[in-house]
Amino acid sequence: MRTRRIKLYLYSIAPEIFSLFKKGYFFNKLYKDVYAGLIVAIISFPLAMALAIASGASPDKGLITAVVAGAFTSLIGGCRYQIGGPTGAFVVIIFNIIQNFGYNGLILATIMAGIILIICGFLRIGKIIQYIPYTVTAGFTAGIGITILSTQIHDILGINLPDTSGNFIDRMIFIFNNISNSSLYAIILGTLVAIVIFILQKYKSSFPRFLLALAMGVFAVMIFGDSFETIGSRFTDLKWNGFSLQFPEITFSLIQQLFPSALTIAFLSGIESLLCCTIADSLTSTKHKSDSELIGQGVSNVFSALLGGLPATGALARTAANIKAGAVSSFSGVFQSLFVCSFMCFLMDYMQYIPIACLAGMLVTIAWNMIGFKQSLYIFHSSKSDLCVFLVTLILTVVVDITVAVEIGFLTAVFFFVKRLIERTEIEISHISNNQPELEKHDNIELHDSIQCINIKGPLFFGLAPAIGEILKRVCRKPEAIILNFEDVPLIDATGARMIRNLVSNSKGMPIILTNLRKYPYEYLSHIDYKQEKIYGYLTTNMKDAVNIANNIVSKI
Image (cartoon, rainbow, N blue to C red; front, side):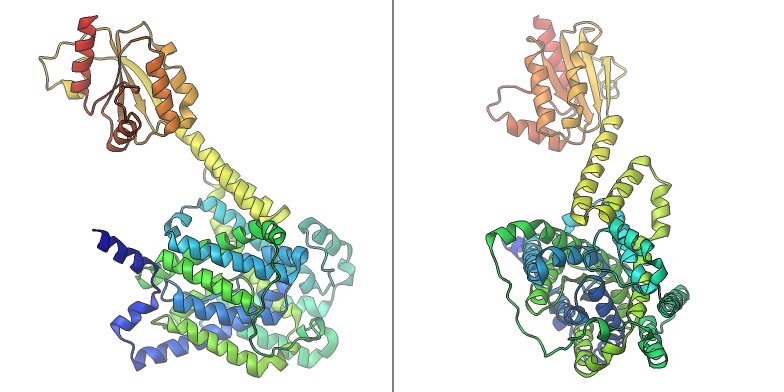
């Protein structure tokens, strides 16, 4: 048994690519993976630059992330079709870290996040992360989309926005006050790029829409020249001299300050990558390994930071494109990285001609998809509690900070969940009679009228403390014995156990019998009462035994 558990553990953390070698890898598969890698690289190249610029970094850092994270995610991750790289989910948090701690702080935070993900993978926390409420993930995803949209308005309008305007409200006020400085050329190009991408997206065209948008931008610069702000004019010293290790300056104080941001990066990376894996499974009828994927994302983030990149996670659009292009193994992600790297080597000098408005138009479409208006409408038509969690998370993401938004959103979801459990838990007081289903088979059982039964329907946990405390006060007349029917109690916690203990201690010698205990509550209470002092009353598994115990005790009174 122990050997089997070890094997299962090793299998859960082993990279998915290992299974490829067991099944064999032939030339026909290699050809398909090379082709899929090329298609994805064409998509990744402009997107990586656009996301890096939106995050407050130079475009080469986004490309480095696409290369490094793409390769390590495929080689060490737990999903056969996953494509790793920079995504819109990190734009807000990266921008804030760079503004407050510089790029050195971002490197350290990303490495810390990677280590957290690796630890989570080895501890097999992969499945637990997926239990985050949908309203929370939808809320912060939509909030990130709105934030990205707000950061691209000034680029589409051609307004020069100071780097210090990182706050959403300040940014919108600045744009409104400077709307008269807009550039007609930038507005037309950014709008056309967004429209073309939306049209190709709507009709599900296989043509690489981001590459077409990039070509439109370069063509516009060739015709109108200096009418556009380009990558070259914004990043005058842009160049790439190959990969080099960049070790951050580390102090204990800096680690303390960056730890919340590192947790946020790890959380976003884990959630986004596992969500992407789940969708990839549904498209290919395969099954990913959650723990292995977390380890892969952790390693990807560590090496991306050390080599001068940004935080990374699984990219849904690129993963879907990888599948549609015919990828058959994890090697497609490796080839994607090789192609992006070759683009960097041979096309870096031409990147300076790409207009910023063109990249802004691309990001507008990404932000719009992240907001997810159709999905949001479902939440608006659901319960008020779900809507409240969604709106709280969304608003805090936009106005305050994504770290605060996730924490408060999760706590709000837990609050409403506990509230619903309390509302759906019922406590009924009745007298035992032969009409009890379990007693109809036993006609020879003599019942005492002084025996009272309390039926509890629902989990017995801390949220019900006041209700259980009032049980004795609700008894019509003082009985000689009380039977607590736990048939509909699926679980019990320490607070629930203490309620029962207080009920027994305050009963002044009146016997308390717990019956119809399910497996978990029975084992829980039996384990706590290790001295067998009946501090939780008499524990039975069926009503017949409970009535017999009650009758025997009452007859002796």
